[in-house]
Length: 526
Ligand SMILES: *[C@@H]1O[C@H](CO)[C@@H](O)[C@H](O)[C@H]1NC(C)=O
Ligand SMILES: CC(=O)N[C@H]1CO[C@H](CO)[C@@H](O)[C@@H]1O
Image (cartoon, rainbow, N blue to C red; front, side, top):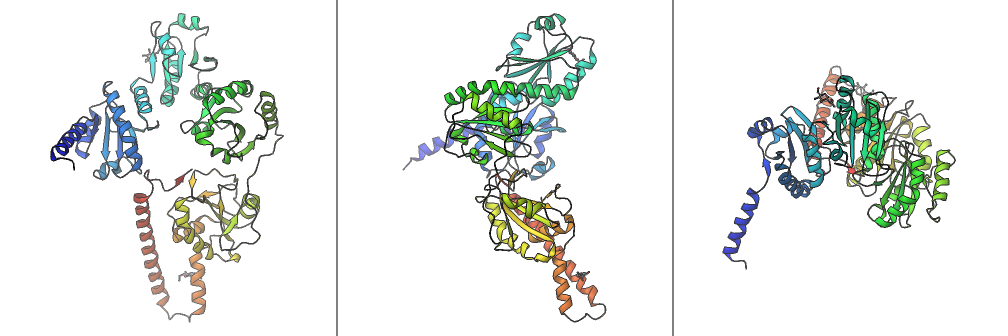
């Protein structure tokens, strides 16, 4: 048994650790003064029970200690104690991390939740968006990050200065920006004022922008030039590749050496299709399952596939072939020329629809969802998704409320086993495809109750079918006509029941936010 003394010592040590924290714990009455008295503050809104918050804690501590030296304080607010404060700042899930420049200038923190990422992000936030450079500082600045952007323009060229600064402000989270008006430095670089040079620690080392200064054009230039010829797909880069709006070619391999080797082999293809297709390696050991999403077999490496990111079409390369420059090159060229059909993964079309919920698969998607005159409510689910399982019985009940004659179809599709054209962010996703407007489905964002879903169908469907109205119609038809005046009373009673139901729905909604995943999201993320 531990002696009392060692327990006491343990307590002392724990207290010492706690007080040694460099993270400022703020409350409603200290928060405003604190953010007012510091130019830049990073604040984490958390809940003690939240798993992601616990995982973040040591990283956040480490970042706080490093950033303390740069006079950038990190703060945290316990939302179970400071509910009002958290509400004031629109906190909906945990952790929520925000950058404060005073109490009113607030921006979401968009970096990763790791100490080095937090440190790098906040260091950049502390700099002016554009650093003024001289012959002494330019050289060092060029290599101070993976990607830096330098503007070369004349001291009296206010327009270029302003435009560049505005573009820099919008991308300050992503790259470092500097500028110089020293004409000699531009000459040495071989550019004519006004110009922009993006320096990078990879590929050609730099790219030059010499078009007319325009915020959009500068932004596009920087984003394109900053992407490595053959990058790496991972949790931190995936969203960027998807947002780029061009197809992504994946090179799956298990070891870093293999990935480097294949990147080298296929680099000329990346160069050739630069700006039209992104090329990136991906760690098959950690993210091999993603190959399944691209209709590749998940245990045969290395492998190659192209994803058309806008329409979410997949073009897997034959996994029995070697990834040579020539074979992959021919495949990519065929893709560009539109000579390859996308691969479609589908479960078999059900021979008979068993329950009230129509089963949709990739191969009957067009027929059941798009090519008919029904209002179609479609749930995209995943077999492993807990929220989907919870919804299933309610969804069946909902579907049963619409007879086959009703012009409303309630359907579901296993989006992990079927390629659907829709972009799905999480499960379940529910969309209504209204008759006559199938190319503009409406995503459902209400609470997952039968009443609210029925209301959604009524509101947004072409036929405005009211499942509940249908019910009272039969009731009334069967019952004797009501004596005069009773009709109104019945109506009032219905209203009471309805509003009670909607209050209950609100309660469920609130409860769902509290008890769902740590991040407050109601979705199981992909
Ligand atoms: C751009 O304008 C700002 C504000 O007037 C000035 O401080 C800065 O030196 C200018 N940048 C260059 C490179 O001349
Ligand atoms: C279709 C139909 O007749 N619905 C009726 C249901 O009940 C309400 C209230 O009594 C009526 O207004 C609807 O017309």
